[in-house]
Length: 311
Ligand code: PBG
Image 1 (cartoon, rainbow, N blue to C red):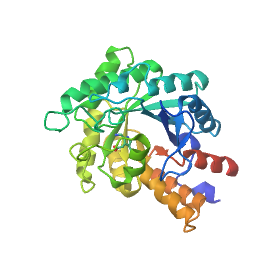
Image 2 (image 1 turned 135 degrees about the vertical axis):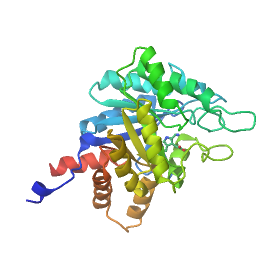
Image 3 (image 1 turned 90 degrees about the vertical axis):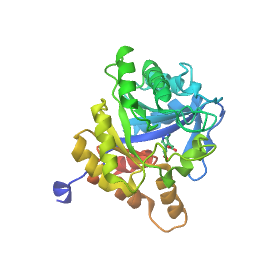
């Protein structure tokens, strides 16, 4: 009876699992603050993706950790780069599993910012657009099903769309990180990706958590530039914006349940304060209830496993 009137359903085929792929790791490396999540060597990435696919997880979202970084982040668009290699390997082995690639420069720049810098250390928006576009098309060439720009530069969705179209990838959708806040909840990710800014912070290009209307405007702007899906990130403190962005754009909305949100749950579970399965299912369900069509979460594999047990 309860199933008959339930309004939202947690489903593995709405979940996305982020993966960190390292060019230098020779074995799986644990990540501080994220028990159960590892930096994967290229040789392990297909196995990890397969585990997710077997459980019915819809997609993986790839982040690359290159062997070398430079001021421009040139590893990001290297056709033989770590994400490009991982994408090709996963698509070869698991053609049904969707591969989404994170398009950003911060994991590839030696200064850790999401774009190239001016003399004064600020990010140069327009020069960065071309590099992001190049990065996105190299991912599509490697076989990415969806590209997801997370840099928050102005005009990047339009620039990426134009480049993809001109390179023959007009069918490759863009999932724009539209409402991406300058958040304290990205801490463990930056440790995992080695992408903490060497100086300053990201507040010039990420959004102020106090600004909800601005988030909706950003999402509408990305939609007008050709975004096929939009994202709200982080997720847990932003349920109002998941709903508002969904209403305003009418596009599929993804919610990113980020590293710090995962870390909080894991820490509380380890301390014996909360019950993991119930808490995680409640969190993921609440994101769907808020309006998310797609949920990106480090809990995806566990959740899919639990769902398969109850089915
Ligand atoms: C890259 C990027 C970040 C995250 C996703 N893409 C880090 C940041 O903006 O500092 C964070 C994801 C997470 O915390 O799980 N720009």
